[in-house]
Image (cartoon, rainbow, N blue to C red):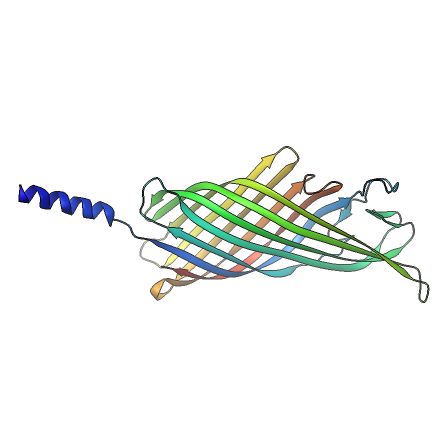
Length: 261
């Protein structure tokens, strides 16, 4: 009887401690180049549809760098999902001339004029996921509850000194999105190198959104490592706020410091 209890105790202990609580923390820098267009039609201005403004040629946005953060918490409890939280920021500014008949909300430039404008986006993610594989090949799948909070400011500068004047349109927008999440990592045997793909996707009604990362990581001692790769974000939506239509892409390289504990 004692032998049976001891065996049962060992088996139970092995199941309970086959895995422990662990996770990863990231802090990185993302260099992103914009492409696509945006337009804003303010109701009741009588100015007609907003100009389909090219992000690079009309709004004069250029490549920029922003910080991003990620953290994963994994545990051995069955059925309860693991957790990932993330924060990504995107910001751009532009100044330059626009062509005739530029319209943005209540702004109308009938002849050549200059605009100053800016974009700020903050994206917050809470991901619940399960591990499908956990050895040299790892695979996770889950759902991300994402929230985008942003603002576009456009200021028109028309006329000539001392008779020039300005008009600013500030457009705030936000969007909640549940996205399908997936990650695959391949740990190269006999090395400290791993390759990874991670992404989210959402498409419904007038909104399509996706983001993905392709990366390589080298891990030093004590779980500290460096990761570098390519990151992309796409947002095509008419649901951010009334009158605002965007079809925007931001992509480019990134680098991060990682602690895997």
